[in-house]
View 1 (cartoon, one colour):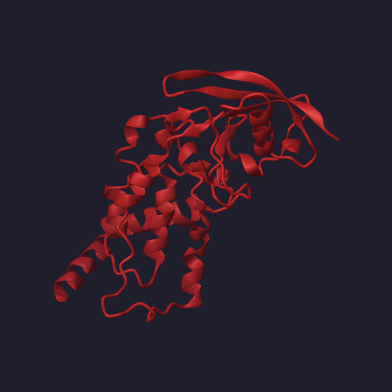
View 2 (cartoon, one colour):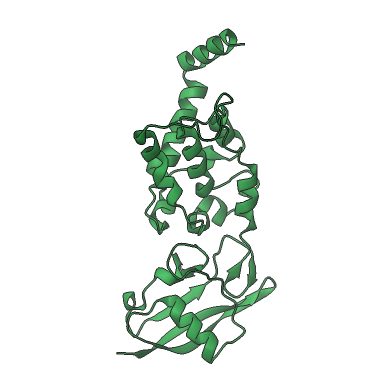
Length: 252
């Protein structure tokens, strides 16, 4: 059975805006994105919203629904009561372009700073061989759909714009962990780069990024904490530090 939902949507641009109230029809089985599309079709044809697959795999329709970072296409309307006002606002961490669309270029700029995968020089494409256990170690991180909900909820940048130049965020940390765990990655500076250039040390592991990940990636436990441990071992353990110097000298 359908009903009329109370919807509160942020309207505006980079110069400012406000929340506006609407009443929109909701049918059984619909998600927030369905209701936003009906709002566009019936009352607000100029409403700007980013979306693509409507299947929870492209990460395009990220927004904040009742204050929680979510994918609109995966947030069912039946999770709210018929009397509840559903508030939809743009991601707070990134600059607003218009209405529900934000400028997430920060994430792509940080991705460009990441050193690329470096295969062993003696191997050619097609000669790479990995044990299944090594594949499975980092397989979890490859599920990322780059919705940037983890980036949005991370308070290091959510509440402090001044941290953005020095902090890459949880999305980039799982990429760093994926490459660091890859047995064929010949780059030796993953840990140092994460610490010195990505701001790994600024993360205080509150797990808020893990809580909002629509793919269920254990960002904090399986990526960030192991990377922090590797940094500590490599940088502060005197035996590891001495060993790295000796073997580096021997291989010179």
